[in-house]
Length: 206
Length: 183
Image 1: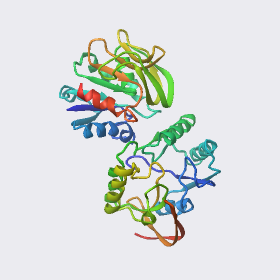
Image 2: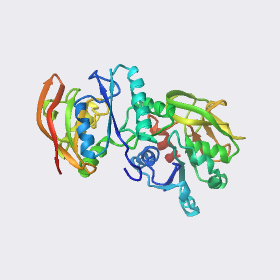
Image 3: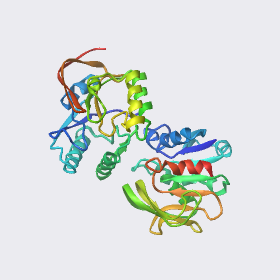
Image 4: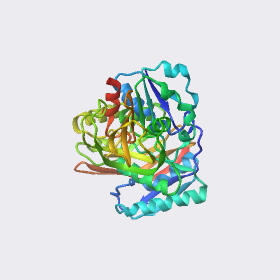
């Protein structure tokens, strides 16, 4: 992260899989990813209820400030004003910096950057027409990006899933010390809603 | 060539990606060349070599630019079109005798354009993304273009092509940056 150091990863574990604010598919594996990167994880439960979940996020960030002495937080927000505004307000209340380095980035350029930088990302959820079963578990690579670009043009799908159309998990990347290997996963799909539920995974040498 | 002045707390900061690169992206997509220079590193040559200048915004917690208004006195004599965005608007206000004062606002809100200008067009209501801890008073002689005297959303120099907007055009209002380039 350039000249800044990462103190911890904050994971909000939502009881509601349809949380407005938080990513939910396979979130239980975020701890393994934190281990793979070599950064402590701060895992925080929330019921995932609209607006009330913000109080939980505030508590989690306040706890990170207390435990790790963080100066600010970094989010992956690209387009969502709903999410960005709420995180900005929490940071202001807690006197923390808020960084959104992907803000307003072209989503196709972003996906291409992930691939060119060596991130291994797979799709773990699809939640919009016309995303078919072939997307569930698919690796984000050149051909898939091309397909998503076409769906953006034809159906206004956000290629990086910023509108919740797609959810993903990162298995490897340049900041990883070890990579995540998925040993067992179950695919569920019905009527343009699908998930890849990871049952077993482990860390292996890169 | 359009000069984008990075007003973030330090050169090449993480904030640059959030407040400068999106503006550079809009310019690039509209076919304009731009050069990004941090305000600590701004030279007279860079200012003189620019056709137009945009002063970009900063993170909510960042007010370092307001402590170095002495680095922006060149704006006073510039004949080039200048657009100040958020922190950039605050800098323009301070250079021309306005005041920067606490006036936090976060989120999408309605903005009333009250004066027709080439940049923002005729009076009407638009929606804009706000992310600032400070507002400004209208500098002496400046025209209030949007908002009210107690909540200045946009202003313009009375004689020169110098404008400021307190909201962030990279969200939902990219047309403002495109318009600035075409004026």
